Length: 508
Ligand code: FAD
Ligand code: DLZ
Ligand code: SF4
Image (tube, rainbow, N blue to C red; front, side, top):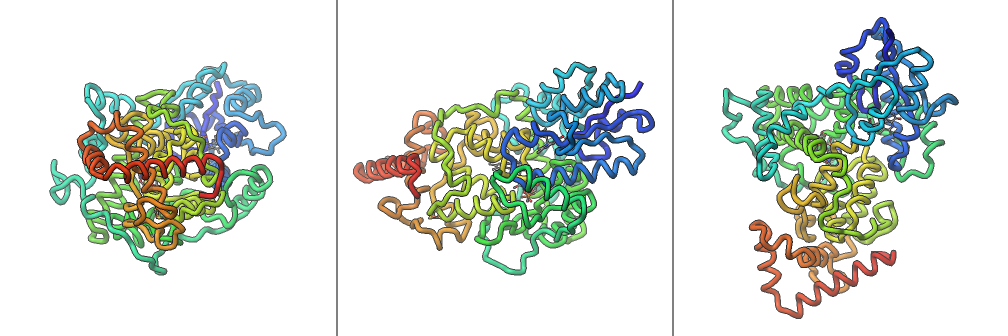
């Protein structure tokens, strides 16, 4: 009896469990561009264009491999508008009653598939290194979940950068060497060029017509859209940027959005690359003497450590995780996250780049846009929905723990042991943004005081009860308490006034 084999937009991998369990000579692969997926948040047009083009090319690739693929483009008159709807339509067409699917990366879609009135089997997504059970067993009985310990287990499990049972270089983590600011340099390579082709061009026209009002610039389009292109991007990164990745991974430079970052998260999350092949390629560069250990280790940690860890947290914590708000932050996300003018140069740079490229690197996401939202007390659900919409690599399983957990501390400390907050001094140290800013990063109070300086204290004092007892935060409270009283009052009053102006939509 024929079965349907569901392949979602972020499941574009030959070794996908649903494909492995199916019979090429009998079963029908179902792929669909649908309104529900394209509209659950207002995705960046580049994200939609990347995914639809990659889906169309993967469908063509599957057909070449001998699969029968029922593919529904967004503008197909028969399009049922949702994944369950498309499954039911294809079931009627083919007479199939059984669906093989690889577990989606989002609770919303898992529930929707479980409710489809067909016999749906959800198979584990074995493109990840750790199964749900392995993560649950690891988490069981621990007082706190810390990525560093989980990461060591993943190193042991994969054998990556291991010398026997010891870590290469005698240490698990070389982050100590990795906190350097960078200077502008016109010779930095960035990702490789993209070839325009008929499929991409057709999808760009479709996206321009269907999503004209979504935040984000569609053209020029700069992402690869198939596995060959993703492999080229990986190779390009390893050759040109990996050697300096570690040293400069926290740096920010105006006009240089990529620095030494890989820009492969979107390919990896869509399934065009797999985590182990990426890490093996990076390990090989280290073993061949083409990349230093601090870079190779730092990079591999992001993938087998952070990426696997946040996925574990998302599935361990359950469907309510993205809506948590332990700090009870209720402020509306300011319009300058959607491109309205702001005088804060760091925000203008990070948001402008996000609008143009659907990309910002980790420290821009964490210490500029994330830091500001947390300091200002923005509702974390709004922050979550913004991040899920604007980045080409954003899917809830990876985005929510990074945003709700790591960046907004809205999960109460599951992902991070303390909130990632900083005053303007951190941004000044790691970037050149402050040089051309309207505000003065050295000013702690007064009309030009950097808003990060004002809000830093404002945040700490608002949440004194929760954080003053945290040994890593107690020194900050001692510093505040040592200021003279009138200065303390001025800082807090100016913070209030800033938030008030921002809330009224004034230019800040
Ligand atoms: P590089 O800096 O070159 O890193 C290499 C790879 O490591 C990335 O491609 C990614 O696969 C992995 N990685 C690095 N850090 C993380 C992390 N914290 N969690 C998971 N994987 C990681 N990553 C996403 O894939 N999707 C998201 O929606 C996402 N949202 C984020 C939101 C916030 C607030 C923060 C602080 C981080 C977020 N990240 C997210 C993690 C990280 O910022 C991106 O993976 C990275 O910027 C992607 O760019 P790159 O490929 O150039 O990465
Ligand atoms: C993100 C996305 C978008 C924009 N569109 C589609 C789509 O039309 N069809 C599809 O199968 N998948 C799409 N996706 C990816 C899904 O939203 C993703 O599979 C879930 O969020 C689970 O990670
Ligand atoms: Fe950002 Fe403050 Fe620096 Fe301006 S001065 S760029 S607001 S950190």
